[in-house]
Image (cartoon, rainbow, N blue to C red; front, side, top):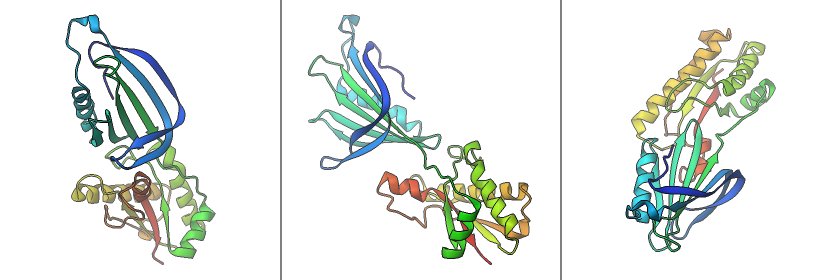
Length: 245
């Protein structure tokens, strides 16, 4: 996602699963876990080119995340820290920049936290039990970013829904797509509808009678959790199977 800033070199680079403190505001710090990449950059003072300010470095990274519809979440000139966020390939990324120009102008630390997409391992009997109990079940099916193509890793969920329907021929369902509130409401509505229809088409391809199925997108209109948190947004990006008879 990112190119190295000109005239810098890496003095240290590590990657592991770890917890990271992420500054969301001047008064809010969240501890999140995921795959952490930590890179310390040193500016080459012998390049003959003036070192960039920390703000200039931040703007370069901000422009990079915008290509993925990301954004700046927090920036403090006094503290010398900035937080950016983006979503790509079904994963959420937090990008933290730390100013180290106190040691030498142009030095900074880049930390990237990669958080796995919501995963789900659910069986046909569990789907049936939840449908009978509450009338609906939330499924976390991963799609290609911004598209309605179901990723191979989520095909097993579709298979289990099809298995449940084949074993219970009296059940008809509505496949309903939902999103978080990131992006424009109209685009989210369209995307959720196309994803719901993609799941319905996948069930038909598995031999389920299309007369037993319907599909609808709700966009961001029916959140399960608070969209103000990343965990809430992850839970809101879902496909629900609703029992209609």
